[in-house]
Length: 194
Ligand SMILES: CC(C)(COP(=O)(O)OP(=O)(O)OC[C@H]1O[C@@H](n2cnc3c(N)ncnc32)[C@H](O)[C@@H]1OP(=O)(O)O)[C@@H](O)C(=O)NCCC(=O)NCCS
Image: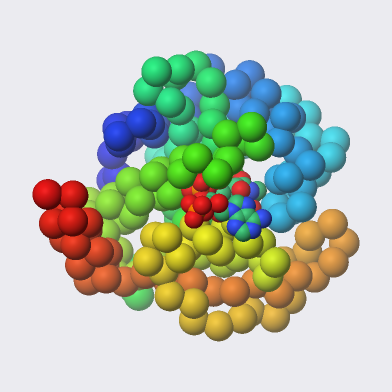
């Protein structure tokens, strides 16, 4: 099982509970124009009932060890939801997981997604023992592409018409990071910090 609560330099990343519905709904509502551009679930008529349904499913998925969703918070403002970071199994046999994320619009470009994703990768390649983590990113989603690059992911290729977003089938690029690459990057990171 991954850790249910992780602290990074600035962030507190923890699993959801029912009490998070209001904070999640607030963050989604202020970010809808940006989320709606890339994420099919972020419909313009998103309601608080959708947020509570998401949390119900998230709690269940965690129990079934099917997927792990986390709420991202600032350590010094823990009541405010900054975004989601999620991880789920793609192949048990191949030890492959996928991650997905979003950050509220008034907190983007501050390194929050990269910091949170790096912490989740530590769980994927640590406790959970995955060999490979993938991400699918819509062609044209330059902010998310930059996150993949900063995390050290390699672009494998393009998946044709992978997701239906606002009525259009959108090509996605497939990115991946292997366990040995993550560990090498981290050794380098620790060395460069020291
Ligand atoms: C993608 C997303 C999660 C990034 O979150 P974030 O916390 O801003 O990410 P970070 O700050 O760690 O990194 C973002 C990087 O992209 C860069 N960036 C932001 N907007 C960009 C754009 N339009 N074009 C190119 N680069 C961009 C930032 O400058 C930063 O790079 P830098 O550190 O080299 O300056 C956020 O923009 C988001 O939620 N978008 C909408 C939902 C979404 O696309 N989710 C991902 C689906 S795959």
